Image (cartoon, rainbow, N blue to C red; front, side, top):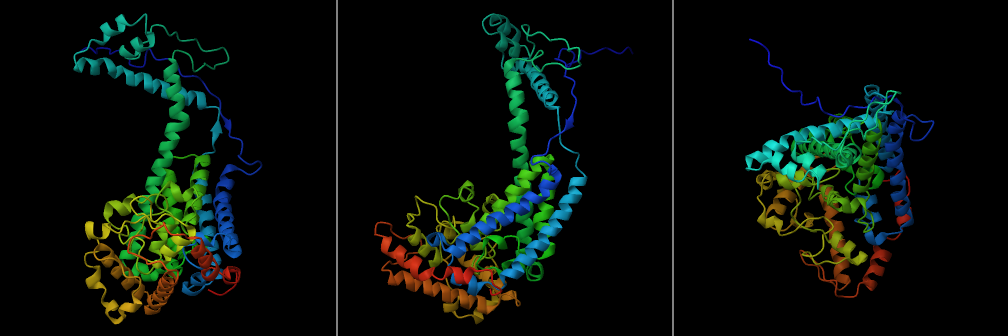
Length: 495
């Protein structure tokens, strides 16, 4: 049987230009980009951390603290020098893995941009081939429409004809072997191709990387809390910081640091097919976000705390004894917590948050303004109790703890189950947890409640009125509750 030749869909496409590549100049000469990719995340970590530490020691914004300096000193179970040591260990491992990762990547080059944009323009042209057939499905004659508008709207006529533009001429390739992108492409094709290459595809790459790292960290982080052995053996080290601070963000067991942070970010980078320069910004941005989530401040002007609801207030709940089995999402978005029902549902249950809001003179109408913890107390009774439906029955250790030492009390419903499971996990951690953690936190909570009562404001379960004058209370909060910050928060060997 004779072969029947088929028309080539590519035969009438504009030619692709030739190109010649050279190595991309380094961002900060003479440091190669691959080396800078290793340096920048570490520099960003300590730079932002030391900024927050300086704010701590100078006590500049006490009204925006989530916890007092006294809490940082008394409730944490690890010294600051131990934190620094373990962070440095993780960053050494991170650097070694990054170096190996860089060896698998080609060097970034320039000179191929026009060619790649032309490839996108070709793809756009090829996609137009389907238009006549699609119009025929709804009873429209593409050829007839194109003839009618050929003189008045030649570009639109070309689109109707499946990307065949009679008014566009293909310019022959120049003698030096290079062709202009304008050869045979419509202006709108060039514009869209440029947008795809410079903006849309990179944005999608960053979006994919964020999705991958959020997914990786959520499920691994959640597993470390749901599995008793993984929590007590590995992850409990990070939770020695019941009151987080900025440079404790990467304080982890070395195995956790490698699996959760280093490996997760590396996998995201590979799946998103980023180049070295993109990876540099992705790793650095992820680091800054992680530090900011542990900074201990609800700063109204901090852009990182307003990009998503996954911020310092949201993550602070996860470090409290009553919320330790909730709010697993990190570092960017909270969609996995919300999809799988692990977001804290008890609202701003702690009097500490109410005190912080008063000090900062924040609006407290829950229906109009976000709470510090980004949690709606109504969710406790309206949401499905899964995956916490058995946590209260399994919290057998709580029966030996007096109710007055289980403060703050969560609202009835799902939040009550979440708090019971979280507190049981603290009791299971015999080395750095135990009943003393609950008793100490309850004492801090009682102090905060007493302070609120002395201030002449009755705290409700969900909100505090802003109609009263707050200036006097703010002065008392900043004076009596945040004093002596420099002495407490200095880089000493105490906790």
